[in-house]
Length: 89
Image 1 (cartoon, rainbow, N blue to C red):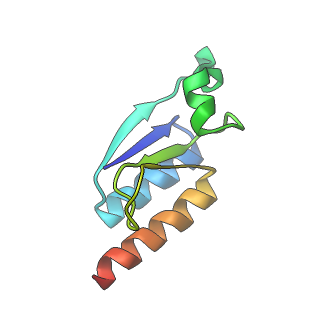
Image 2: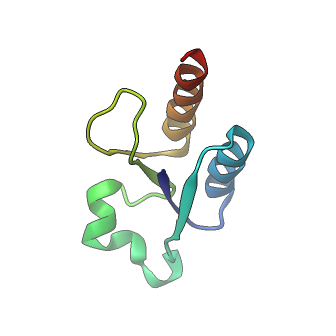
């Protein structure tokens, strides 16, 4: 399961589209940027640059602890690697 911290912005929508097309299980967690929720300590621990989107993959392909990522480009690269590795199994 992947937690997607998002706002309804183009970068947030890119990740949702990828997750849907790849049929990966995810949960949406909306971050209200109008209320400054991206500056809360819990969110800054995940995305130190306070940017949205960010994800936590609770089942990383390589195993181990949950993996947190931020920046839409890095998230898309990671998800691409994840589905490639999953398909190779």
